[in-house]
Each structure stands twice: as structure tokens, then as C-alpha cells.
Image (cartoon, rainbow, N blue to C red; front, top):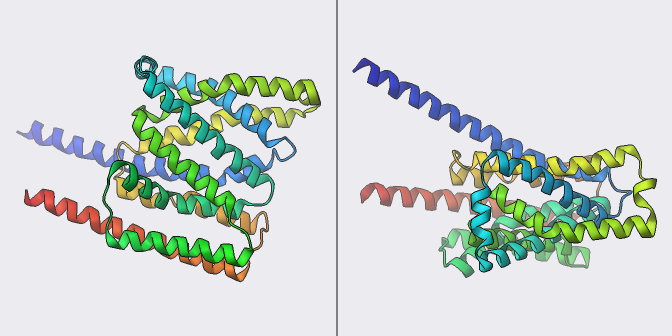
Length: 313
């Protein structure tokens, strides 16, 4: 009996440790995504398209290593046999490449605040796609939050005299990417490995073009080469942390922690890059932040009702 109690106690301690480690991994992943602007800003002298090409190639090499270590090759072989899932991986590859390109362009052209707005709005658009494509239901409170966020975007559009297309492209491309990924049912690591493999041939051709037309390889500094090569591991590390955290951290908590990334991006843009905020833009952001608080509260209430309903049954 004592041995049984000891086993249960050890299991609980391991479980608690796993949850704590999961939270650390989740925060680390979102924090790394949040400070990405500092990294990519250091490559501002390199053409954004060329940066993306290198990011794809070096990410693929890094992901091959992780797929091997995690023994995920069987899931990739299974997908390759299904033409529909391969096509979905191709679509996901296009969407993530658009997201990466717009983000790096935004960082190197003074639109990091707009990029942070895109990632603040992204969860709301993801939910809208879930409602439209997967017939998921959301509460009236969550609908109110989405309406409030769109009102904030409208205020910023009127104030700036232009639509925040950077935020729009980042949020829609990533929300669509998430929807497509759900259909492919591949693990996060092997999924991105498939996507970068699909993109790699074009990326290599473009790298060759830049070298032939501009002599970029020979003229680039050692520091730039190091940063380009490390772009692969830098891209993969937060994804690995995220995938590991998702196994132990509750979905609601992951949803709340995801705002760490865009918050850090916003702070970096405002206080490190000195990007300016008009009064109208501040008001618009307040609307979006209020919408996120409302949406998160609505999600918590919805999860509580589901839990209570399951307990009753």
C-alpha cells in the first residue's frame, strides 16, 4: 500500500513538473517570436526576399535534424502517399512564406507596430475561420470582442488615411495557415519540414539569381552570413518549444500566453525602434486590446461551461 501511495506521489510530482516546464517552454517560445524584430533588423541591408530564401533553406536543414531526432519520418511518408494532403502542405507553404516575407519587410521598413497589430488580431481571425470552415461555435461575448477589434482597425484606418495592410496580410496569412495546418494533421515540426522542403527548390533558384545578378555571396560580410545561417535554428527553436508546451499546457492558457509575442514586438517598435503612434492609432490599439481581454474572458467562461457540462454528465 505504501509503495502504491509513493508511486502516486511521484507521478503527481512528475505531472506538476511537466506542467511547470510546459509553461516555461510556452513563454520562451512566445518571447522568442516577440524579439524576432531585433534579429531580422540586423539583416536590414539584405534584400527581404533573399533573407526569406535563406531562412527557408537553413530552416529545412534544421528541421530535417529535428524530424530525425523526434522520429517523425513515418508521419511525413504517410502524407506523401496522399496527394490531397501534399496539396494542403503546398498551400500552407505559400501562406507561411507570405507571412515570413511581409514580417521581415515590415521589420526592415519601420512597420513593426503594424506587424504587432497583425499578431494581436490573428487569434480573432483564426476563430472566425474556425466558425466558417469547421462550424465551431463561439459565444455572444466573443462575437462582441471581434466586432470591437474591427472597430479599432477602422479607427486606425481613418486616422492614418490608409488601410493597415501589413497587419492585414500578417493576420490573414497566419490565420489561414493555421486553418490549413489543421487539415493536414501533421505534427508542427514535420509539417514545417514538409513546407520548407516544398519551398526549398525555388529558394535555391532565387539565391542563385541574386548571386548571379548582384554578386551577393561574395560581397556579404561574415556577420551577415552567420545571421542568415542561424536564421534556420532561430526559426525552428520556438516552434519546438511551442510543440512541446502544447502537450501539457491547457489550451486556454496557451491562448492567453500567445499575446506575449505581439506585446514584445509593440514595445520593441515603440521604445527600441522609436516608431511613432498618433492619437488615433493609440485609440485603435486600445480598442483591440480591450477586444482581446473581452475575448479571453469569453473563452474562459466557455471552457468553464464545457467543464461543468462534462462533470454533470
